[in-house]
Image (cartoon, rainbow over all chains, first blue to last red; front, side):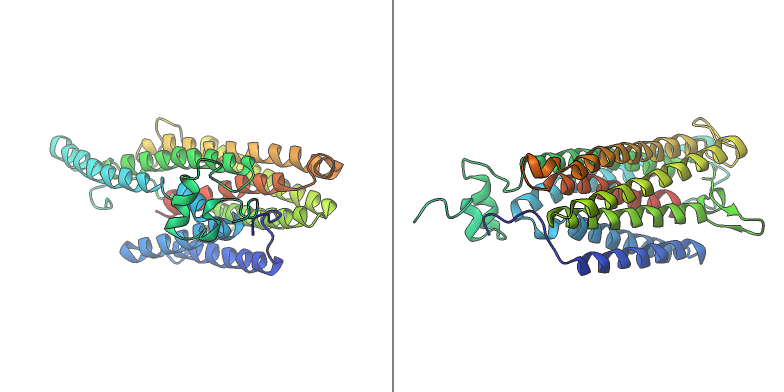
Length: 113
Length: 230
């Protein structure tokens, strides 16, 4: 295991993932085409997004076969982004509230959130 | 204990937490991959943060806005003589990019098998898909700017921030695709000329190029979900 010649895997694996990506993309397009709304829309968008991202990263980018040390370095730091996203949702909600407090409800009051 | 059998102290348990600690504390090379591959991963990690910050900025702006956000489903609809079909161009672009990811994965495989002609043509197919993607994006931008009057500072459909976030995020992604097409052509020509047979005799460079290309596809998955489907 010390010296493998790069990442070599059966072609059938790639074809399977390729096919799955097409199917998942079709599903995520259908989310919009069939006009899902509310929580259902978000759940489906995120589900298909994470499945696609997972397949690309783990199989096409070979992360599934890398050593754990590299996995940790690749997948660990982006957790900081999740923290940023969380903080920014609080911030944006606050800005939105101050805006409607001082400038009144916008045209979007109904559609928003 | 004979030496030179293991490539690193983490070898005995490469997939456990102990292996990670051993790899990092070995006082020698940490990552047992070609250096070019490790460097590409670090670059992609920094790029993850760039796109992550763009998308988070877009989210913050969109959540805080009072005016109605233009409905992407309608803005990006396209009519082929009949009823406008929602998001159709974006859907086609998504399928093109996924096709290109597939051909790229095949190219990496063929490279390692030493089938250099096949690897070359698969890389050219990938580049061609990339060029198609960028062309369709140019068409989309033209339609938005000329026909719909979308500008970075405003648009007739609603919230002014729509234009600035759209042009910045898709523009930056398009730039990555364009750079990737050039990258593929450069490396592809080397593959065809037998450069990697002569110099190092291995095709890890094709895999590294593939990492970049798959990353571009990966970013599009997130842009598609957050910008077009939200």
